[in-house]
Image (tube, rainbow, N blue to C red; front, side):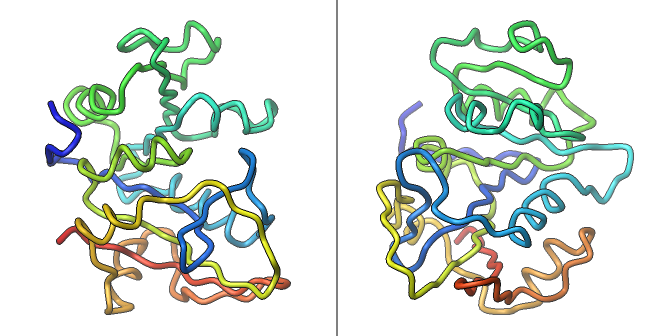
Length: 208
């Protein structure tokens, strides 16, 4: 299947990402250039909490993103952690990482297809990085959750989302209630935050 093909899955496939606006910068030298505790809690809550308490969410990430998580926090709890690497087998549960809640997969498309069809206990599938994984996922996604960050600080960025592809496939929800409804089960009702030198807002992008 070509990179420009569009596949729609039955389950929501949702990149969740914090970006420095307006260029959609997401990192520098493999790290986040900020530490925003409230935004980190939002990420945890949104990717963990489900409407159906008998289900859980999956978080899909590249190998570098997995390794960037401190070992004491891996795998991310109460979520199925799916690690992508071209050197992985097509699908292997836990054996390399020694964790039942970890799956190794070698492509985002095959991982999403498996999660969509073979896991009745998965409610939503969240893409959590890094840049290459985000930018190769848009054709599969139903929504984007973007934390739009603004600051007067001079920040260096070397990793960016593909804005051309985002604007081609998605539009930002203009109705605040759309975002609020999408994250309803998490209890978030306000999307604008000021934290230190940063102001940011939680935004929902919907598929055109």
